Image (cartoon, rainbow, N blue to C red):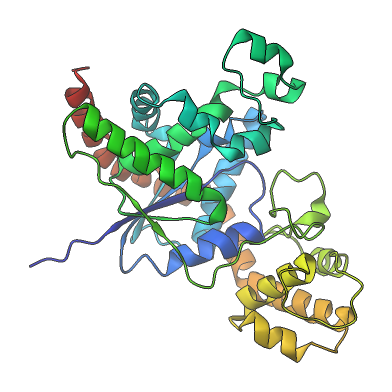
Length: 347
């Protein structure tokens, strides 16, 4: 009997240069899944436009993200690599799910408040709207409702497993809630409830300038992140300027967020335990520790950067990979769309 592989879906927004946090937190961990799971990896461009994007830069970012996926080791012969916006069923299913999503469920989503600068106050009526901060009043509907689109991304492919970090657990919970709500409303067991895939040993990578803030493409400070395409000298500069504290010894302690973050990065790039690295550098001083960390980052990124330069020279190859990925994703997505529309009564 042929073994049915479990389906894994994940993706990254093409909203800027992909960085070390994207690699250690997501892409690197996808590589090992390709031989044991049915994998779909999206370039989530519909999510990217929840904040303003310059069209030409967005197009380039989509191409660059595909090149990074390939350079890091995603294999189009083993995985489906596709651009979300090229598969129209994502938006169509999001609308159907949006029509069964209670406003209260979205009001609880913390990332909207974080990204919009919103307070606890949610605009449930016109009077409340007048009291809201300017940032929240100017936030778009897409930013507010994008967890529904994320649910559609997952449910469209009947994903069994979704690799998630701490900041995405709430969205997967909403996806499960929406799958259950759809099944109850239409008296069916159509959608399965996807499970989180917790990758052991994977730590959230934080800003080099603020250990309690996630490393982000949107951070105004270039010193806050190491982009996968940064030159060796720039990587060294950023690591040496990374924030630490005034304590003389190096220790792996969550109460020391900056050094804790640097140790997690060191561990991720060296495949050593962060506790062992802390013990090795306990009395070495921040200068020696940072210098060695910079060297290992440069060394580990070198083959990725070499691959990236090669892939970027062959736009036709990347275009073909994305075209094939779009066709393969659309086969699954269009079937789901057809079945959902039939269950709802739209066709």
